[in-house]
Image 1 (cartoon, helix red, strand yellow):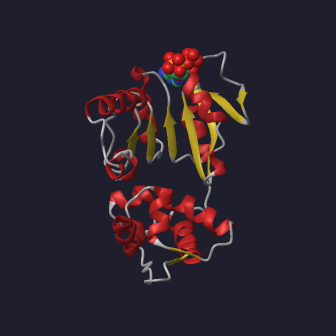
Image 2: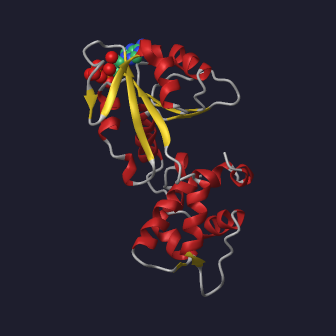
Length: 225
Ligand code: ATP
């Protein structure tokens, strides 16, 4: 991880990919500068937050000018390590896992799922899209061969912790956990937990109990704050 990113507050860091995607589109359309109001409208983050976020990475917008798009783009590229392809593996080629393997992550960033694992002999040895599916018995060998540092977990809940224990022994530093399991991990490993059933239930709860939320607080707090 780069040094300057460690100084950025976590909430700001979480918004970086969102900013990056928008700035990349602006750059592609030939725009040279952007105001915090325009950014705010596009990414649905209030402009005071945007100004504070951008001040952390030395992008000081000028009144009446806004931010320099080229500067922002090269900052985000460096900070998000966009020049370096990160090898990602997926474990659990069920319905959700298969959908991820077919999804083109490269459309928006340089992340690509390179390989997948399953313990179902029917699935092992096949390719989904262009991603090979390996047996879980080959986990350690293939993690090392592909130098995998990030894993997406889409196995049933009961399989999540035992697999995680194996992953952390083989240098995996980031886990995107789509299972309902709360994982125990060493302090140098990071887990982002996305439980789709809980998110859906929570959305429905909010619709029922807070029907008149104003626009600013109605964005997904999980990702944007
Ligand atoms: P499907 O309809 O293919 O079963 P699903 O998403 O409903 O999909 P799950 O039971 O959630 O199925 O399992 C997801 C995937 O994880 C399946 O492909 C299953 O073979 C695989 N799986 C289950 N246990 C393990 C394990 N211990 N190690 C690796 N993969 C596993």
